[in-house]
Length: 264
Image (tube, rainbow, N blue to C red; front, side, top):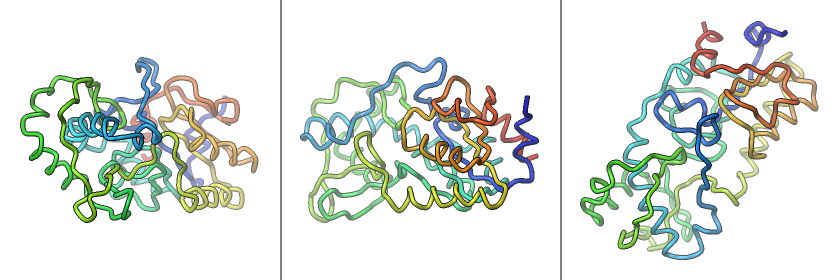
């Protein structure tokens, strides 16, 4: 059997990370071995009307209040030390940014940013969180025991009466600046990631996937591109992934442990 650490050491790397990397920071993942089935809100549902957005922002207001307190773990710190040619993260939690990871693409955006769907002005989630708290006093405290979900919201059905403000500039609809299910990743982000993966073919590099089941095409396509160019692919994930048939080596291990060993 190929030793994954030996395969990766002293090679240029592109790294793709998923929700499994952040579980050691207390953020649950989507599809780990013990994870319940989850159905995130789609973009089409979000823009369908005020009730859907009320439901989203009520849940997200509580979830963000907890997610923003999460700290990077040993896996994030190890990747920052490794400083790959490019780190592509499917996570929106911002933890890679917190440890100063260079050459980073947040494929699905960051939950810490908010965008107006009308005027496209961006603002901080922290400022919106403060506005939501002022408009809905005591709401987060009433539901302090509800379970957190990996995309920054919580399991909550009672959202009627939650007040959602509009854009401070034009009163338009506010949305977290992340790629929802049903949206496409911006083409320039995808192009940058493809270019970094393809460049590995000329530098004897490898693609490392850490903590992703590769269930959605936004991440799986980079594994497919690497395989097309005969670039070694190492997948570190607890549980089956859609990329397993293309992997040079599959490691059933925790991300923090493996990445810390790789970074030395």
